[in-house]
Length: 202
Image (tube, rainbow, N blue to C red):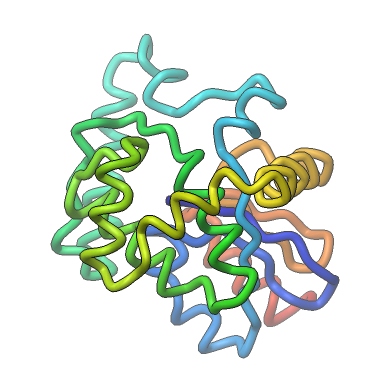
């Protein structure tokens, strides 16, 4: 469950998923505002000829094992004791991201994202299955059927496509990506660098 934010200079734009939740203290310390704009990671990969690290590093001995160990250390540092690799990975996030667009039109999107992150990265659910999608969001206190129906709204579809293309046009090639003004920071391992930039250059 991931998204990239694109916004005016002077405000932090960023991804919200495990990475952003784990670094919320950065925004508290700096007083920066995090604005989230949903986009589709698969669309970004297709447009930039990129692919998930587990695929791109598949032929590099030891690389994926180290990648998973880094995730474990990150979760340990930030207290994500319930994190588990989704057994259905890679999951098509189209439904999740369209619903994120729809929900965010009239609501603070953070509760939706937090629920989706839990479903994907704690509960290990197959969130590209419409029945699982509806049942999971119903159980989390949302109207799952309404969210599913909203994913078929032509305006919602178009907005997600536009957001994704805008991200690519701005230089985004993966998630999480953050912008401070026009300065791009990619990856959870560069969030501390972003904090330095906020304090010294923004």
